[in-house]
Image (cartoon, rainbow, N blue to C red; front, top):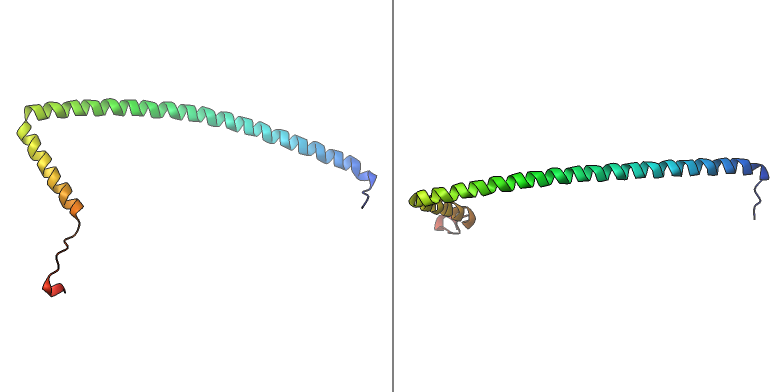
Length: 104
């Protein structure tokens, strides 16, 4: 085995001290970052819940308005529903599969 000189021992101690200091600083930075992330996550969660609540209320009001409109004008509502159904059907059916003789 190779023997290391004993004069390197004080430098080794200084390196260990610097390493411990760096590890302590890194751990402190990690704790601060974790705390900041938890706080930001909590704030974001509250904001999202607020937006979801307001959106739910708006949708409920719109649905109630739509129900009232359908009750007042059922024929118009049926016409609108039929038109929307035809348009959705046209969009979903895709291209025509008819093969013409000129294309063959």
